[in-house]
Image (cartoon, rainbow, N blue to C red):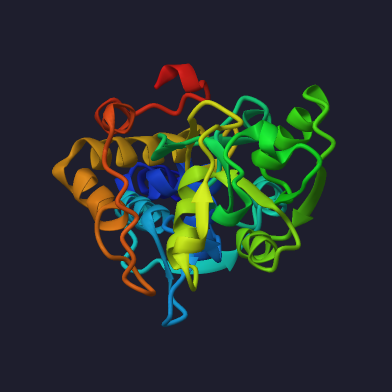
Length: 299
């Protein structure tokens, strides 16, 4: 009876009770002392490797805030952060099977993906466009008729271009690439006429090219502007609630706009390029009224 009384008393202590109550990702992080972030290698300016072999980007900074919040929530003096590169094809499986805890990249939040994973509040909006060499004079989707094009395997863009190809009977040859850098290289080498991808990622690739003046983005898009979100596991309400509180507070604070200016309106590594993408009305609303909605019309 004495031992039982001691056990009850111990469970009544706030710290121990909290540890006992943890579930899902927070429990895993507490027990292992580690949080694993999935990152991209060439998704400028969201998640990429700079010239010092360091993983940087807008999404990485947002994930950093979530990591800080997790550490504070779990009252941990030390929290090891493990970085694991992911691709468009591997990111969802690695979230779903528990290999990574947050996917800090350039991942579109849509209803189909929400059947497998969850997202925290949207941090960017982008439409699916294409980049090509100016000399080829390709500006609209119809201009791609009969051409060889490329998109990144496992991306929503690949699905959109395949669907458009069939619906419009464009007769395009659609090549898959393992990542954005490999896809852009095919355009550089004239092995593909155009690369279909999110317009902001294309802008980053063009700005980073050896001769940016050779390339242009299309005048027409394959989609309405769609939301990007930090991905996390589905049906993990406590962890999602923490991520949502953290990102909402960040976006609505002066720090949120400062973070946007850092990555979209200032020189960024590795070459000091400036994407010069101002906060338009849709992007400003996104920051002022955070939401994890997958519906483009919500923005």
